[in-house]
Length: 112
Length: 112
Image (cartoon, rainbow over all chains, first blue to last red; front, side, top):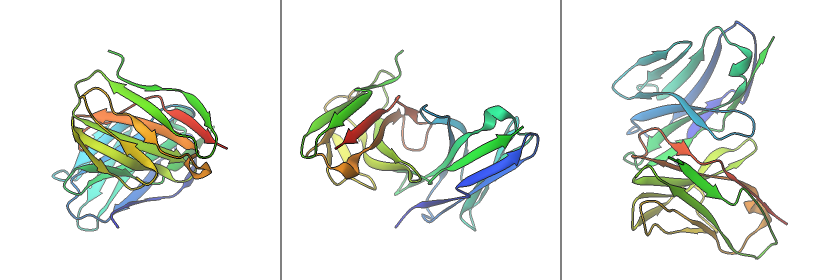
């Protein structure tokens, strides 16, 4: 079925290093790819998104890249800080953008 | 603006009981959705609505009903609670699936 696969499920990096989380999707008609951050006990919040007519988007220390041919997109966080520790979810629209489905999540830990 | 509100915050049910999780938004969003979050499973779409009077199934609709009589409200009904429905439930609203989703604070449901 149409789904989003996210890897890795856990990621631990040293403060100041970069972190990369990857997602693949199956619906070739998908055209919207957001990333959400969820801190412990809180609700998910959008941190960055990209649409299918763009290959890369940056916002300060975070960036997202999209490869439509390979059907994958990635979140890049540079110069990681302790407050980046959280669970990150990728998502994509399916079925003519009627639904938004999420990946399984990545628990990112920044070690001081 | 209150944004997206959910009630109750916590609920314990016995197997076989029914209940309704409430969700309301004051942003005049047409698109509303319900997700459940289980450890290691990410956010899974239960049902969604593209406008008043229109609902459709998501990835895991069995055991749940929804209705959308007004733009503001999107209640989720558990027909006969089962332990497998123990989860955290998030309601979200937006202009569409392809825009930022605004999540409510969540309802933590335990079925014994």
